[in-house]
Length: 109
Image (cartoon, rainbow, N blue to C red; front, side, top):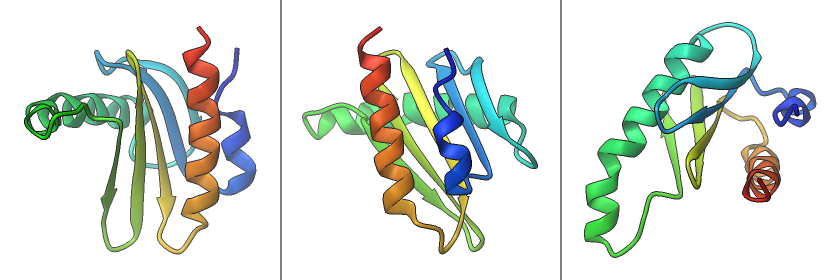
């Protein structure tokens, strides 16, 4: 089943669905970073943020990374991570809502 297709019309540069092991399950888009790099880095970030989230009395659910030109929006859904690379100035709210809709579909697995 394709989960990420709905992100293409929103102009997402790159998106991945990965497990917490950082292996790509599904990828969308072109350009850098490669799906493999994005998936591995998202998994690494989620693992390294876990102690802080636990110290705050919770768990990592969502995070954002911003550079001068791009943003990475990420959601943790059980044993999965969804990540989307977008250009600054894009409709991050709409993309975030679509990532949340995809996350709901993943929870049904």
